Length: 228
Image (cartoon, rainbow, N blue to C red; front, side):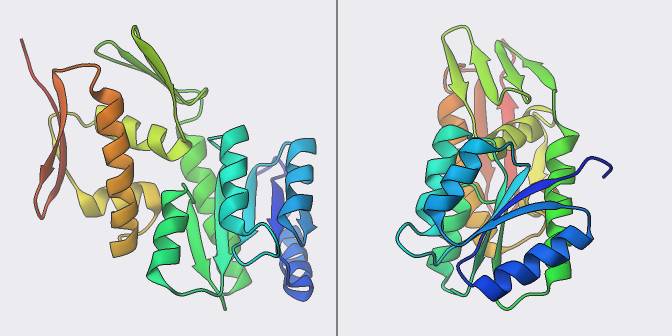
């Protein structure tokens, strides 16, 4: 990528934070590092970051709560969680919040760099795409699902999943393909997170009775459009 990527790194382990900062800067990232969510929020409000890397176990406001605050300001902002917690409940919570990745410590700094590039490649592919689907219009740039009766603001993950379904409607999409294409890997806990997003999407699409998302047990999903 020729354009410098601005990374917000929030990590309360000073040594780890500085090591990651140096490693990311070697890959031409512009890195702003801080040790608390409160300082991170100030930086977030003052700068136009490309992506966030957030430690979960921060003092005072933890990484989960910080991510929720970010989502209120910018629903489409991509971010990665770093954590020493290996509990599946924490991973599921992080993914439900819309995290693009969830990396457990210890990890290789090179792996973090590669994952950041993968996330930005995925999010950049659909940027400024406008998709018409029946009476819906999906705006990937503004992260909006527009319908004559309602305009729904979306998270970036919701928008990506909607785009995926709409461009493959009336076809069976295997769960493993959705996870690999959008989340980057086929994982049980990612599948649990995906189910939450699909439930939200069903609600958004309910404005059109002719549209339904079918769960094909053991296989995947199918966005059905009934012909009148």
